[in-house]
Length: 463
Ligand SMILES: NC(=O)c1ccc[n+]([C@@H]2O[C@H](COP(=O)([O-])OP(=O)(O)OC[C@H]3O[C@@H](n4cnc5c(N)ncnc54)[C@H](O)[C@@H]3O)[C@@H](O)[C@H]2O)c1
Ligand SMILES: O=C(O)[C@H](O)COP(=O)(O)O
Image (cartoon, rainbow, N blue to C red; front, side, top):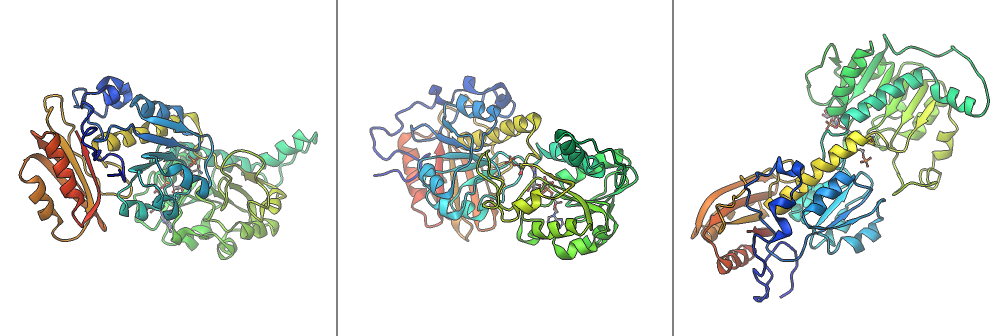
């Protein structure tokens, strides 16, 4: 029989359970010291049921910290510096079990449909809008990200950009590079005493709030949630309230249908004359042609953009009208800072993200833990220990429909279930159970019977 998905028993008996559970493939000594903090030292090294190594594809120059953690597990890691197009991804993703991406790689339903072996996606960034999260969940593919490891880097960038815009530093520096001495104070300001309006008071917005206040700014914010203010910041009721009051407006919302074009012509009309706009969230949040008009008319005195509707897969001479039709107009504007999506690109952030996401991928591949998953219910069981050599861990991802647990328990209930946990999120449920005193034949039988249930999305057995 063919193997449709890894991490499932090989169906040919000769190879079945051919490898000892204590094989060096996933031995505790191969865990990095960082990883040992999350998996106990005496943890039994669980491994995927099949003997094939796990194949990992890392795109978009994922940090070395993450690459090392995955390689140390014995996984086969392929690393690429840039992203891939949809068609290239479809070719590459077919035999991959784990994929690591950043914000550029679009894992659409069309791509994921071809990913027959994929069990988990790691977004080595904050945003997960580039992944079809629901489609992934429906296929039993877990998605992890790093929810706040680069928040501080973005907040610091915005503080720097406010000072740069208020002092027209970009223009002065460009002029000096061209040999022109142009000493002016007209239209140049301190940021002290000005009002910053933060749209989206989440991890980044809240960090920025504290930093801006320390710079002597008044802080107001707009968020769809009622969020506790930090320091003397003040939440305003509507976006219009914020636009009417703020001198610096900065966007920190996720890319979702509600935030698409949330700053457009109407919003620019409501801003104070001479205000500044910063967008380091996602390129679809600000209508850039409308921003160009607002800057040309003098309504907006300066702007900083880090993100764009279309961004290239890798570095090169791509910021032109082929990529975004407005690129040339944008580049001609004064007091405009344009950066290539570097908000989270610091050594500190990338190292931390590499560790955090790689650890989550290892915990999921080796132990089935969905703690921190963004599209599946969070289910964790304590690690099995070396004193439990004949235990197996059964993971059954299934449709959240009535009667499934009864059927599953009919199958595993004949054995000694040491511990079990189940949870659901929308249409998908995740069950994890540790079963003691099992041999190879039992594991194969359990697997086959669970796979035959109509509720099945994915079955994994780790031992
Ligand atoms: N430029 C970069 O390199 C970079 C780096 C990190 C994050 N980002 C982007 O920044 C975004 C925000 O990051 P975060 O970590 O602060 O996210 P977060 O989830 O912690 O906060 C987002 C906030 O936006 C609010 N929100 C959602 N919809 C809203 C709406 N319609 N109106 C007002 N508020 C709304 C949420 O309630 C939440 O408080 C990310 O989703 C990502 O796209 C960009
Ligand atoms: O979502 C994020 O964390 C940021 O947009 C950064 O994305 P990047 O890792 O692709 O730079």
